[in-house]
Image (cartoon, rainbow over all chains, first blue to last red; front, side, top):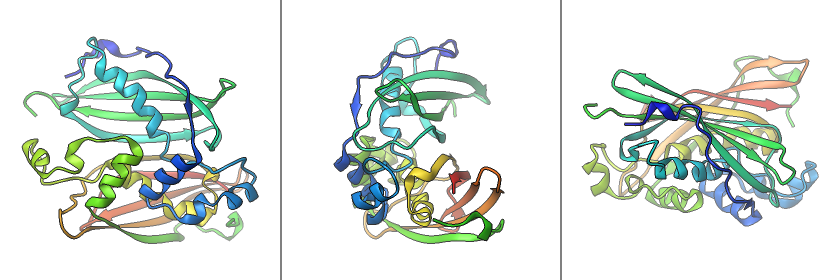
Length: 147
Length: 138
């Protein structure tokens, strides 16, 4: 179950997260990225200030916001009944090592569908200058009690 | 960097197989911070009614875009990437699950040099991601 009244709710901004070069390498290798994609000289030759994070790396920041939802008694989200339905990342610019990021999650919608709930979370990720870097959009399906 | 003028809708720009074993899942759990035990413990997976230990959906999503990043030569050219999780990938305790990714050109905008690449990610003959679309800037 999930409380439909949390639609529109914004959760507090996360603490600052410093994107580390070796964290990028670790995440990239864990997602089977090529060694070329984590070559510093190649990243600089492409005009970046440091290594570029893999496209799905913002999931790490989305997770901070989701933890707040799970801990929120008002949301009443039973995480044991949650299935990841959809995920999307929209970039304003790439995330690079050295970025100091914060994220803020809001509940875009809560819909009821055949005994299940579909909850859409938008996580906006900002840099140190408070410019939007990326939006992570996650749809979770919360299975109903009899599903 | 590929040239937009050389691309045609339907072109296969990359095709790659990935071998997932339990080590892959543990490595991804550590790198991502997703330690849900259904991704490494058979007893927990079975107790919640799953057919076995599953790969993280985000691991499948993450590896599926690797052929596109390699084709571009720069992950910074990815503008947007979205998927729907349609089927689980069961990873056995011994052996491995083989995932195949085919990336095709789906839409071209010569004005803005933006290209949509559609990904087909399959395991055991079934597509495991739906509506898997990437927008890139050439």
